[in-house]
Length: 157
Image (cartoon, rainbow, N blue to C red; front, side, top):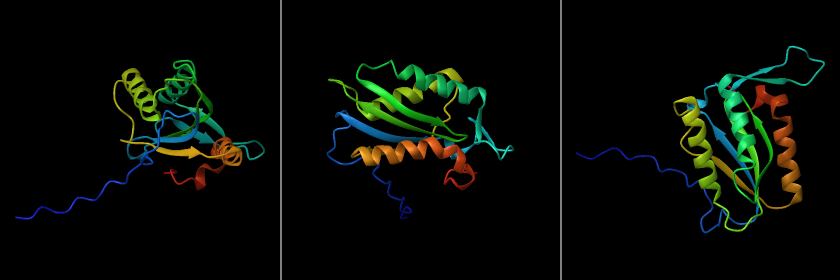
């Protein structure tokens, strides 16, 4: 009996790229099945920008992001946003002997999983190597305005 063909997993990382190399990286991490467990976006008052109202789990994620800013020497989280079912980060690596992005994200997810008592994370994460200042500025603006565009976001459920 022939087994059904399994779909090929997309390779998430750039082949032959050193993810501990100096530079900036745009990271997106989603919850399992994109369930909105980190909070909600409140936009009832159309005269102001939408506000992110974090759940207890969302607050744990935000606090962990802040803690991770000081965990590794030479690693900085330049910008972040906690959305209802995903997070965006700009991580800059400027130190010698820095861990790879994969190690940083693995430890980040593990830390939150231990605090919450269960895993809330999708298996992998999205990364983009930021190539220049124009790319950096575009991603910074995207993260900054992500709550404003929540209903149009590809992760909106």
